[in-house]
Image (tube, rainbow, N blue to C red):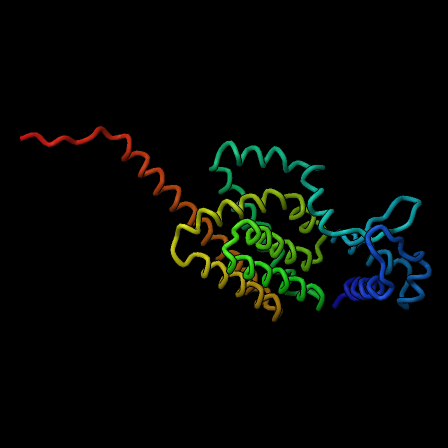
Amino acid sequence: MRLSDRLAEQLRALIDEQGLKPGDRLPAERRLAEELGASRPSVREAIRQLASQGLLRSRQGGGTYVQAREAVVDDWPDRHLVRPLDELVSDDPEYRYDVLEARHALEGGTAWHAALRATARDRQEIQRRFEDMVRFQSRGDPDLSAQADARFHLAIAEASHNAVLLQMMRGVFELLRSTVTENRQRMYLIQHTQDQLTAQHQALMEAILRGDAEAARATVWRHLEFVHGSVRKLDEDEARRARSSRLPPFILTS
């Protein structure tokens, strides 16, 4: 494990041990360095890493504070450029295929790095999100299942410990959640699709948990190709039925 990853994990543990809640201020950098037995630059890098994951927020001249991760994720789309993309997808369903292509490019990388870099806490979070998804799916709740699905993929991005990939995933989180919801609702029409999705997510999770980067990347790609193919087939079937319905009625004459 890299030094920055190890220190970030120790800093997480310190936050838990001291019972710090969102809004609480961390001890000064010098004190943290003493408690963690590390240099101040190393502690600063660990703080930056946790800030990139949404756990901390540094205020210029005002220290570093614990932050609620869920609030950060939900606030990102409103402050960045996702809103216009969300409107594009709403206006033209074909844009959802662009979303899937973008996910294919982005999530192959997050899955790869997560398999190599995930900490014990990261693995627990990925597994918890997977279990949430399965639980909501078993209840027949596509909305909550889709939200858990999106958060499962976001947990993998967090485990990649790549600040750029993570911020990109956060930036498209709301778009990801809305398209996952729509895709899942439509794919319910295909028999056994939900079981296949669960098996694909489980295979992805297991590849990351055992540290198999190649398998993790290949599995997320197969998963996204499956979703793309399933949704494309539904679109083609609907278009075919719509064309048939526009044909004039055939009247038999004696």
